[in-house]
Length: 550
Image (cartoon, rainbow, N blue to C red; front, top):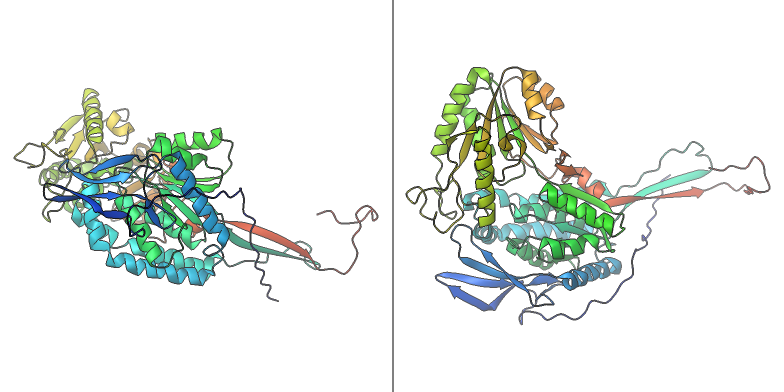
């Protein structure tokens, strides 16, 4: 017997009509306003609005913020900054879109076709998006050309999984299955919120958007004011591929205003956040303070250990791998290798070769093909890194290289951009700030270990547990150690590998919940259970002492 049952799940919350909003131009389907462009030297300055209900609109209060190129300090764009009223309009529009059923009740295979079309559309826009990412974050163009080329895969994977597997129901075998049938199936949650960071603006937003939409939800995304432009462009591309208006809303704004409003909104059924641990705790408190019970996924800080064993295939290969783990994106990723633990037998050789490798890295214009490292995101972030390195040195750390801003001879943009020399710190004890804290920049520490047990103990001496790396040729050792490390994402003889099919998330202060894979799809849906009594025998609890209760 095959039972197919399709029900529409009840919608929670009361719908209110959003107030009329002023579109930015005669082309309301464009997030960037061409006729308001200005000139700043040779660089065009664009203005971007909020993306609500398929239109680019100004913030209700008229607020705008600047987006500056961290490499040059020049104004790259201005963007409307959402307030509470704008978040309200976005959530209400997303709720209306969800209730309409145009997307939420569309068959999964039909949604899948639209998401595959969106992936192809995204591929065609990758050159534009890569340059936009580089200009707004300061990260090297080469990095974004490599990274963004894989972003469409998230839409394809989640669309395929939803169409082929995600919504399959089941018939659990009941204890007394003779006269009862239990049907269980998955349904979307409703309006979901996402608060995304500036270090991987498009990739991290796309990871959340792809699974939320594949699951049939509507989504409101609050990207960072420092780097909102590619997420706004993605929303436009999604709708050009056939996504109904209102299903994906994008409201750049400050965390304390727009982010807090999104976290507290009664119609938001799930919130997905990537960022610092302190901010993640603040968001959790906001949701608790407003008396709302809802799902929450938080991918937070990291302080990844990288364990280099004496039996690694070659020290040179391990040095190259650790340099990539630590300094790609100028060390501004949540799984960057920060605490490099090296076995005593190869410690001296590894340390010497790592310092030589780091000194050879080239700082400069992120758009230039020869540049290895760009700036950090902002002046405030630069000052924070300087303070952390200073405190590490005060606690006994020795700088083997770096620990300062580059000279003009080393980096022509050092006087205008937010550059920091890639830094290697030695003599770092377990209570040193460089070992305890996440330094979100191009800074690593080296610590020597003797035994395997000591390496595991050092690696786990952290409040974080997101990423971790192991360099060894012994597959048994790699497997044995990986089971003992408190990290949710680990690599052996590589780093930063990421795939839409592989779950991503951490332990401890690195967060809760998982991105990617079936795990993420399950978190963006929930189950409904229906038990049907099939017996023809009359039931009478109050008239039959032997009547069944459960």
